[in-house]
Image (cartoon, rainbow, N blue to C red; front, top):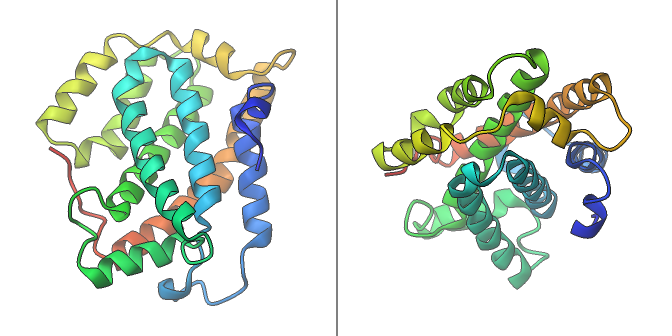
Length: 223
């Protein structure tokens, strides 16, 4: 995987496309209908989540709360993965272990971290899709629509209140679009990149969510 300093030279979106493309090529052949045998590489999942943080950084400090949550969840998963890389190379094994131990829904579990990271990726994919589909739409509306269909159903009143405050401080759509475009590239190129990214990311997320459903984690809510 690329190191952070290398990512800064190019586009976060292009880096995510590259990582997801490699992940798909390396995906073990098997019965995709049997969710107990699904392989979701933990480190590539963490890597793509880190790229989401960089996209949120471009939106600015208004996304600080969401960014902090993502970072904490990434660190939780990374610590476990680092403790035994061979055992925890598959995210599904982490979910299975915590489910078997009865800890999946308790405290700061990696299962809960995985749920919120997947939802954060859902939010990012929805936002990028809307941004390139209607670049003239107000950023506040784009963020609100994306939030409503991805994160809002799972947020309690505290999280929703924090989001409403943040929504008032988002930059305009043109500013974000310019920040997401690598130097010397055009809007059309960015649009193509976002379409490619979502074509790879959405099926990947669908697979993750199907496994979360299998372990009864898909209905978890925050305060």
